[in-house]
Image (cartoon, rainbow, N blue to C red):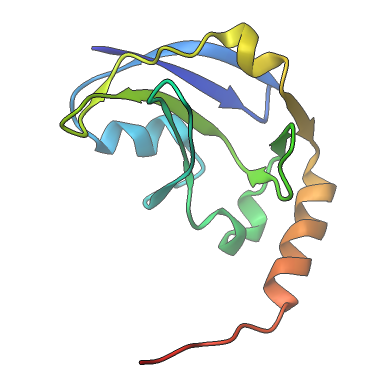
Length: 129
């Protein structure tokens, strides 16, 4: 079992959880029907934040989000923080809850939906080689 931190946007709580060795447990811990995750941030201590990569596509599942100090865009939905070893395997996180609490601002569902609308309406440029 690995110690992780869950950032829960519904309860607006940050708490320790434990995860097994199967990476698919990250999906369940993130919740909201997550089946594809991304790592939007890696910390200096080798911890990584996992978030739902398709959260903006499921408008009816948006419950809230959060933004961290110095970020330009929020994470919509829950996130998990896990450590990473030299082989790229998940291990216990080193980050402390207090460090995350001091950097996070939770945002409500309406703000997340406005962010979603902005992102989804922005034209994309496809570059091919």
